Structure formats: structure tokens, C-alpha cells
Length: 215
Length: 182
Ligand SMILES: [Zn+2]
Image (cartoon, rainbow over all chains, first blue to last red; front, side, top):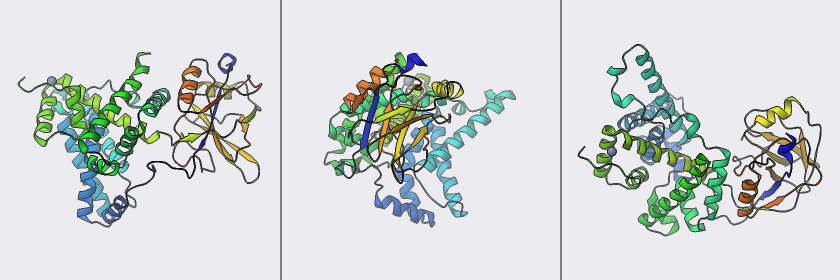
């Protein structure tokens, strides 16, 4: 303990309040809120729009958990079906997307995995369709979580990319699931250029995240 | 296998939704037959999820106003410090009280609150300390790269548990009136 406290350093920082920030991170598009309200009221077209916006993220989150791609599509569909069902039964009071859908999908994936395990214990594993086996079971929940150090490395790397590239990245990845076309429209670039920037930033951050793994 | 293997680029394009429906379908079909490519796709999906986390925790622009005055009180040598040493990370958030400063401690990982109090002249600020020897250099460097003041406190080298820099605070932590889970 005493060795650990030598040379204690502190960093003090203040939020920059009421000053210019390129894109306010809490801003949810007004249409997203309106859509959620309409969906909660049972508007099928609103549901369709929300599904169209968030479906890909749900699929990607399942792939990240090692669900095979065809099963991931099925579980993603099931996710939406369940949410709509809950809404129809009056069980949904709030619709926070994509988080609610991601949680539902994670639940379904875990349920799937449990069932596979149960059947493998009873000796029926060969009869399970291969697509229900995880791609890589070693990618545990632990590896999915970023460590503090990885996060701060990634933040440091992100702080070093150009402000406009950072802006594109934050717009595209802040959880609102803005379509790339909309990101492009907001920053005045082509969709192609937006994707190019996303790939470049992605490469830098990949390197930053991997550094620690090798340390 | 007739279909081409995935490349990191093609997997990335798939994840970004940049492939045509036909190309996407071809790629998907391939991953169902080819284990290494299924893993590659999973890796890229995992990276995407992690990047969401990075983006959503990226701190807003910050600036330094003034150094903190601080001191240590009542640090229990035993259980508390052991628990704190075991904690992966901690951050302290100072919140203004009705009159004068009213420190509240924010601790991640469900460990006991630190018996450490800090006083600030500023009405409200976040203090991040990164004292352990293993990470203080990278911590200080990361802070400096972001233009933050890195400061050694005065005369308090004892009995302070291990901290690491925390660069992202959850939404609402600044205005919270009670400890916030990190
Ligand atoms: Zn392959």
C-alpha cells in the first residue's frame, strides 16, 4: 500500500459548461423520441422505422457474443417480436433503444446457450444444429468488457485524431444509430467518406485497445 | 470452399452495413461453413461493440480551473484499504453542498467508500487521482495529452488507496447528489 502511494498524482478537471461542443452527446433526434412514443401507442409503422434503425446493431451485438450469423438474424427478429408483444400487452412503459433491444437479445442468446448446454449434458449435442454452437466460447463476457486502461488508451487515441474525424466517429457510434447517410448530411461529407473515416478511426482504436493485451 | 474467405476489410464493411445485400449474403453464407472466418466476423463485431463503449464514454471537453487542496482523514488501515486496493478503479467526485464543500465518494465495484476527503475551492469539479506506480506514468501521460493538469498533492503521501485515472464519467454523475456507480 505505501509503495503504491508514492508520487501520488492528481488530475483535476472541470466540465466545460455551456461552451461550444460540436455535437451535444445527449441530443436524441426529435424523431426518435416521437417514434418511440408512437411505437408505445402501438403504431406499427413507427415500430418498423425503429426496427430498421436498430436491427443491425442488435445483430452485431449477437455476433459479438459468438452467435452464428443466421441464428443472430433469427434472434434479432425474435427480439423485436417480443418487444412488440410486450407493448401490445401494455408491459412497456418506456422504449429506450437500442438498449432495451440489446438487453432482450442478450437474454435470448443466453437462453439459447443454456439450452445447448442442457442438451449437451443429456448427450444430444450432436443433434443440435451446428449454428447453435458458439463460434468461440473463449470470448467470454470478461473479454467483451473493456478494462479501465483500455478505455483510457482508446480515449487518448481518439483525442489525437482530427476533430472532424472524431466528430464523425462520435456521431456514428454514440448509440443513436444514426444512419451513415444522416451522419454524412450533418457533417457535409459523402457517405463513402464517412465510412472511410470510420474505418480509419476504427484502425487506430483497434491498435489502442490491443496494446494492453500484449503488455 | 468455393466462396472467398473474409478479409478484415470485408468483415468491417459488413459490420458497417456498407456491403450490397448480395455481398452480405455471400459473406454470411461463408461464415457458416468456415470456422476461421466466423471468428474473424465475431472479432469485428466485438470491436464494434467496444467502440460504441469508447464513443459513449468519451468525455466532453474538459478544462482545468485550479488545483485542489486536499487532505486525508481517518483512513482505516485494515479492511477498507484492502478492499480499496482490490478495487479495479475508483474516482472521486466532489459535489457542492448547500454551504461549503460536501464531498461524496464514488466507488466502482461495490467496495466500501474511501475514507478520503478532498476539499476544493471550486464549486464543483471532478478529481481523478492515479497514484499507483504501475500506471501513473501512462495515466499522467494520457491526462497531459488531453491538456489536463497533472499535479502532485502536497505532503500527503501516506495511507491513500490505489486509484487509477478514470476518463469517462457516467451521464448525470456531475449533477448527482449521491454516490454514482461507475
Ligand atoms: Zn473462410
